[in-house]
Length: 409
Image 1: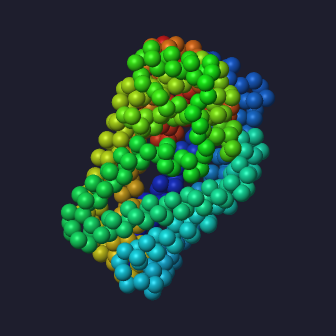
Image 2 (image 1 turned 45 degrees about the vertical axis):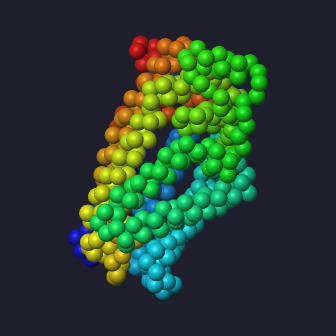
Image 3 (image 1 turned 90 degrees about the horizontal axis):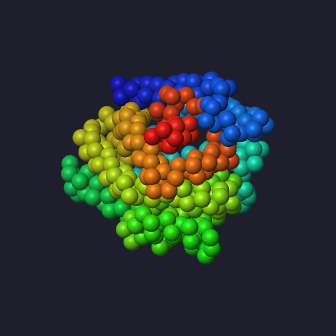
């Protein structure tokens, strides 16, 4: 067991401790007084229900996180990766096939182990608080589709990366970066057309008052919007959402049917105005560029270390390989990923404020404020999160910060 092995153990434990401390600090704020601006979000009974929902999820998170930690450490210390690698080696001499078998076993094993936890969260916790609308059949069909999609798409990317590594040597990262960039752009453009229909039904927003108001707003701000879709999110959950995808002629706004049911039309237009603000401020392009650059940086650093046998041996395998090095690198690189993730979250929160300002300036602040309050109420969200937890985990500012910005910004 080399120094990198112990480094991996330390990284995993430290990350678990940091997450546990952040969760604890956040939980300590559950009973803090509600800010004056949010007094109208919950009545007494609803607030009690929201508090209980957060506490139940906190306890669930402790148990599932501790289980994951013990399992991961046990897998490393007792030679789990070596065992999987031996199986893959015994089934094929081809480097690419061995790698696909190796990751396939790990992915399927991980999914089997995590499924009872996901099942409990969906059919016990979410069911208890009235969120779950999924059936058991739909739950398992979704799991199967997810595994198959990951196997096809992830397997194809992994096979290409290994091929580049074998034939391009130290410069493999450039070819891999180019291919992943093309795939990323393609998925950003056509995600709603190709992936979403595998899980949800999407239909154009029906003619009527809401569509007329949305079209009137889009025309007012000079935003060409021909694709407004409604997605059947209610078949899985009562929680509402809306999102913007694509760019150019492929841009579209997708509204969850739960959003349409929960909000008034002016509030829905305000939510859409927020999404248009993201597009107008070029946030989608900025996020895409940042994602591509971070991928390039990660692949470049990988290229500097992947040929070092110690990287493979660090996870306990006896025979160095590209796929074993990927696992070792992924864990050792995770502290850097955490730092870049913090930066991306900070940028994302800034973008959310800008999109809110756009909605306020082109429509009005009040319908967005009331819409955000309803969405928070219906999802039993935390109105008093700890600042440290927000800093690390929130891609959106907390509700109180957004409302104060809309009122006084």
